[in-house]
Image 1 (tube, rainbow over the protein chains, first blue to last red):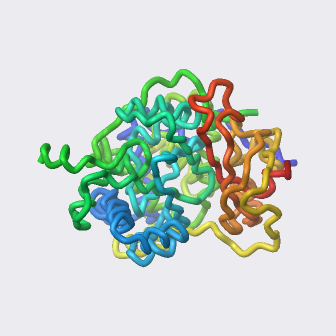
Image 2 (image 1 turned 180 degrees about the horizontal axis):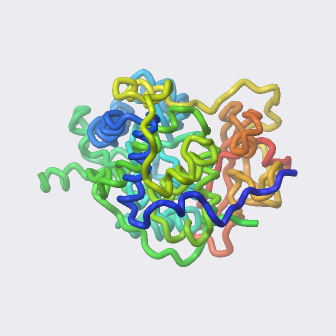
Image 3 (image 1 turned 90 degrees about the vertical axis):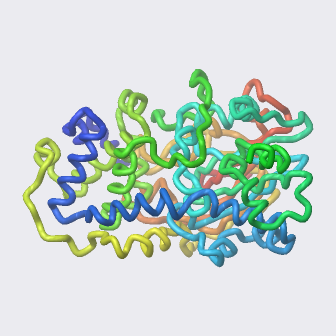
Length: 212
Length: 223
């Protein structure tokens, strides 16, 4: 049996108290030592600000709504299918898609840290990483949904997926009524990030048209 | 025996505050903290389980008062010193003597390929699946690492000693309890296991609700 290595004098306490100065110090040290390239940092930030985000997931969901064979494959082996679309990568190596129906509403959380399907949804929003979401969602998902303005019928069971391994979950929201005949781009606009985490529903086409 | 990260089911945290979709980083230093952490991981001096555990090992008081990316920075500083990549003196000075680029330094042109490649956690294993979808299983009574006292595990306290049913087999995956302590990948079968809310909570919101966790075979026994 090994002993734990708890050390009250963690090295991190040597860094400056202000968080912005703390990361500046780390960046300076690592750059000077030839361990990181500042241009690579900018590239990573640009990737997650502009290239990889919830529109990837919305594309997958819209395809699933339009094509039953695509949806069947997505539910069977999401990793293989999203890889074909170019949505494989860091924090999305093992994907599972779960479908919302009249009977079941799926929600995703990571109570132990902040696991999230980056290649499909990007960097998780602040609330997904918050203590409140991590603590409450497994015990009172309907109360958490109320914080998002969502109320489910009593007959709909909630399934909360706690991402405790390297499997990343994508919720396929229910396709809104009145969307027959809409094309992929039109449907994608109805698929919000929150609807793919399960804290929201896909947008009502009438309501979103009125807003536009 | 608990660590502060294991907060599933805890009371008293207040409302969840929704936010707009377009806002990826709320401050420049958040973006820097994320990108520095990702870039320096390219040296391969630790794995994802080691990096999770170093954040969990923060003092409970620090874990509670640090914002998300402050936890990342604290974990990173501790890992860098542990791995011998940065000294405590350099951290304290906020500077270091210049050195040429290291062989494994992540360059700008390699960023897309490295992010696209990821780090899959499935591995071949000599351990065969003992359960199949539909089987009823019980989790360990004590949600603790069996190799290291106070070590890393992915069985949350709220699901310890609970009875559920296997709903999906994920194949064989790296065991975090071993990997986080550099004891090897020790891959074994991984399952999605569904628990009735009424078997986890004293006052479930709805009797039909379920919580599903991904759990390794060694966390489970037949029930």
